[in-house]
Length: 392
Image (cartoon, rainbow, N blue to C red; front, side, top):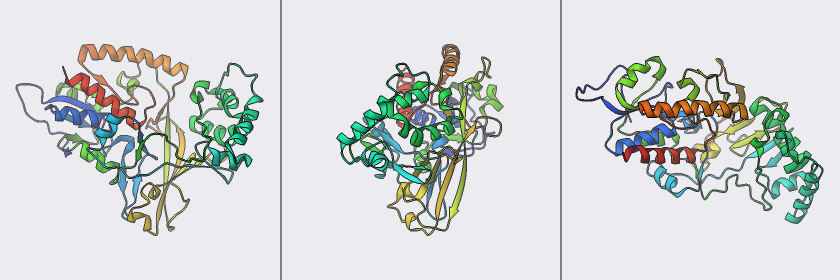
């Protein structure tokens, strides 16, 4: 990665200095920049933040603990192409995500599996657990077409699991009552009738052994990057120095919210350094009650528990608070894919398609496509888009 002063621009009178201006150094932008550079194109990556990596950014403390700056990011995939690609730029440890739910001080393993059912009901066999689960569901068999998330959850899991492990967490996360949330948000819930706390079923899982920040440095090696640089602060100038723009920010912001504002949810993080070696015994604890204001507590050293950093007599924990997306919390973390927002996004997508035809602008990533993406899906999207663009 080659950082430059934000005022410096290569001189080239024969054509524009860059083939691609890439707005955002998260996964989509960084992967696209890597592919374009490897294809012999010249790319400039800009980011309004003072670091690379977007929401996947990490940093290492003096104790050697690698901190996920914006909450837990566990890489997992079943896409062979993605796994082969990203392993060129980092190696992964064998971390397996085994989160715990804390409901009013009682602990329940996630995802829903035999350990969970035993903790809830004392059912020790799959047959007993399934019988109890079907009994819980049967109470809500009269709900033929669930009209909201609460009704849908009750038909899937019954009242006890819903009240203890879903309702409080979900309402905190989205800032709305479950009866106000669309049913499709929770259209399916995985149940495992086996003793298996592995949250993901994907064959490839882990955390970069040197941290996400090092991974992004490797992806952007030899590529010009300008940080603390706002694309919208001088949009015309930036567009004038590149043949095409790759935009990974919020799509409504790109169009100056001309059709109205899309809805997002934000987050706030409170980090604490504590004089204990091991606070909670696991990387992720979800707080599923409604009284606790935060949704999760992340203890970062557990992501790399086999490293020497785990022996440190200090630990770092992050308290994750859901927040409204506004001027006080200006970073959009989650899109709100309800009917109103999806309908509005469809109109912005039409503008984006027109912009691509007229100016060649490429829209990619979670915010530009207004959809929830796992990390591997973002990488695949960037690989496929770069395939499409670079073959021309």
